Image 1 (cartoon, helix red, strand yellow):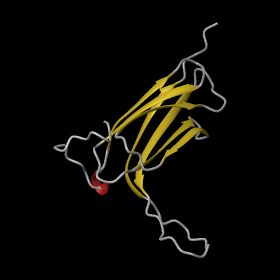
Image 2 (spheres, one colour; image 1 turned 90 degrees about the vertical axis):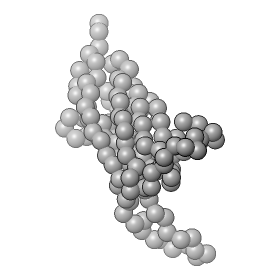
Image 3 (cartoon, rainbow, N blue to C red; image 1 turned 180 degrees about the vertical axis):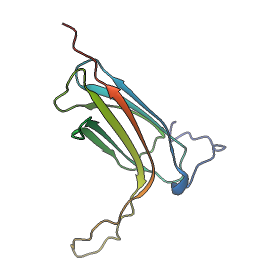
Image 4 (tube, rainbow, N blue to C red; image 1 turned 30 degrees about the vertical axis):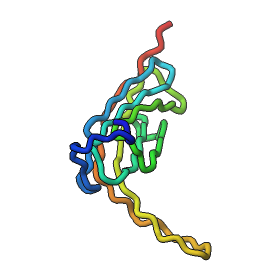
Length: 132
């Protein structure tokens, strides 16, 4: 989707109805690089996306935050910390909206409100074994 040449006939969903249509994972050999492809439903307001890759025992191996994306099709490469060829990993993608507090003239610490999580998906993959 090109954000500058959008189809005027395309139905765009309000934040509560935005969904993650597709989550694909493509490990790039035993190197520890993982290509991620996400597809979101068309949206009226730009959503945020967080993707976390974890080891099978729950340790975080990679994380990315995408704030207010303009695109509903995203493709990027994540790099695993200490890749373990032959090991199983899980990927979780979360789509959410974050309401920010109003700006003030005096600097004060205001906690962020809880985000509105509209969708999440999980999948697993195995990092290929290293071939001698």
